[in-house]
Image 1 (cartoon, rainbow, N blue to C red):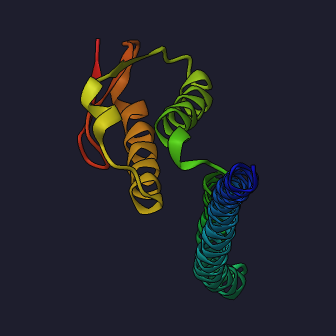
Image 2 (tube, rainbow, N blue to C red; image 1 turned 180 degrees about the vertical axis):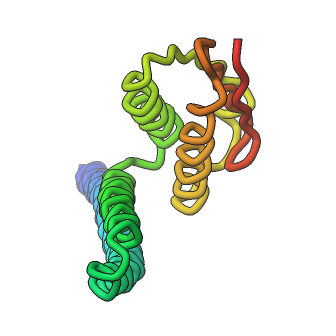
Length: 200
């Protein structure tokens, strides 16, 4: 009888150890998951801080360079306003152009700062479509887009997107004087340079 009671007590102690070990394992897994979540949050915060730093540098560079240029043209315009009014008007036109360009560049930088990595491809296409419609609709020019499947395999970085927007904007502006009454076709493959503009 004593031996049976002792054996049963030993069994209960063993079961308690097993249960305790099981609870410790479960708690350890929970802590592991919690640490992974905390790590992911810290990583996102780090990426956000880095993205904000990049955005600040880009804004400072763009604004600084453009303001220097605008200041130069303003001084030139003032220096010839009496002796050469036509030249002064030309400089004022450049100031207007520079001002518009800096607003576009700042808009692109701020837009890019809010684009998620997993949405970059679609977001860039939307940005290109919006810009092309804005510039081409004013001249009553129709546009058609051909997106190559390879485009979605192209790694996109902030630098690639920035270079792509600058390049495509310049190409669209240049095409206005060449297109006449034709439709513009924009083919996008790999980026930032694998795209083409044709007319039909």
